[in-house]
Image 1 (tube, rainbow, N blue to C red):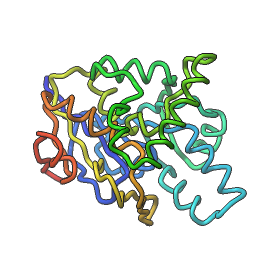
Image 2 (spheres, rainbow, N blue to C red; image 1 turned 120 degrees about the horizontal axis):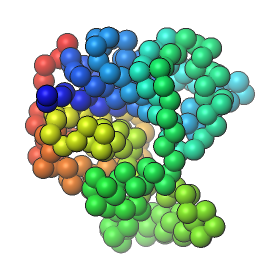
Image 3 (cartoon, one colour; image 1 turned 60 degrees about the vertical axis):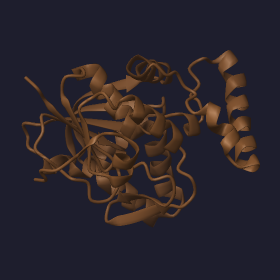
Image 4 (cartoon, rainbow, N blue to C red; image 1 turned 45 degrees about the horizontal axis):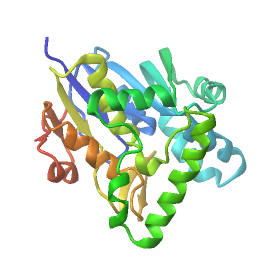
Length: 253
């Protein structure tokens, strides 16, 4: 049976629809309880990002970090996937305290994450290196330096993740993961996932944040999504629709 698989990112006001499977990225899990109990719900958490936010809540700018953590309170999902090899113990302890419930957990290591990207797209990170000459000299040198430093570290630890400038966002990775698990013959729906290079908006709690500089994952996301034009994918975001042949997503709950 053909499934509807919804991927929900952190952009404000994503479209929510009835679906068979829903993936939530980090704080977008605030929408999990709005969907039907019949929907199988998967939550992808950037473990390092969450644990840093938890620690900063206790030591720095507690108001902002409390807003970011509020998205997780009371969320109920079927599966939690931790990525980037952060401290799961700290994450689990906090989530259990705020009423977050999950039926199972999985850890995706950096090496597995890169293998999934390659299996679905045929591209192995770092992604977007060839366009570095088109950046300003200052930006290109900065990115080359990041790449070189990671390259040296990977000689000792091949699992070391490439810089985020050359890796997809977790929203786009969730799409790749869902295609790996469910296959190509389903309808994939991207909601709250943007390809805006600058002034990128995301929502945490009731507060909106804007990233004014070039979004770190922009180039890799753009390249990967173009690789998926042959799949049945729809999007609710104009910036994605402009850069792909995806269909327009409709049918809000």
